[in-house]
Length: 196
Ligand SMILES: Cc1cc2nc3c(=O)[nH]c(=O)nc-3n(C[C@H](O)[C@H](O)[C@H](O)COP(=O)(O)O)c2cc1C
Image (cartoon, rainbow, N blue to C red; front, side, top):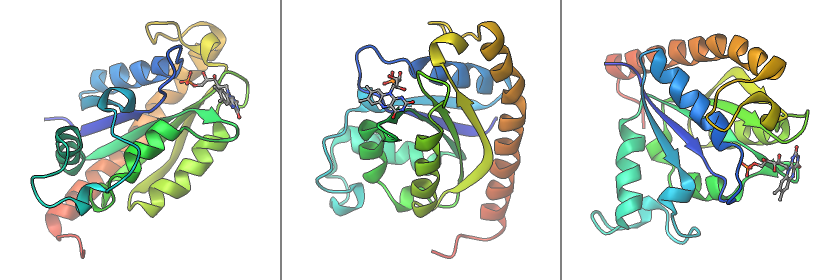
């Protein structure tokens, strides 16, 4: 079976655009044979952080939180689709990730940022790099930076025009980098149990 990859996206806006990039990534990772699940923070809709998942007694966490914990623990790798609000990260996705900590450990993560303009959300991508490292993920160095998103991907997540062609060209290296670290981390977890 292919690498089990969770693709996270966290805009709650009704007119959200980043869903195009999430769709593109899910489709193209699946084409490469990965076992991909899309995790839409808006659909999961965890409450604003009160208790972290681990602060609930076993079996008492809300069902959506429990279910997502199982998926995170079972995954081989993560992809974060990160939009930028006022030079920072989107609150919906940050709220979701903060509910977990140890559940994220010992797996690689990749960041794909986007925005409405030419800067492609890179400031949010940079901020997420620190956050994901703090949460025990190994953040790969390859990134995707997509902007303007409306001129790069159509409503079905298909690349359009010159910007779309550049994204399609950049994707294989991003995916290869993630696949290499995914295999390395899985192999090491098999060889030796994580120290904590
Ligand atoms: C509250 C807010 C703040 C924004 N701040 C930035 C910003 O700092 N830099 C940027 O490039 N785009 C910014 N934008 C434009 C977003 O890149 C654009 O709206 C994008 O589509 C947001 O992602 P979403 O549609 O998936 O929610 C902002 C948009 C909103 C709604």
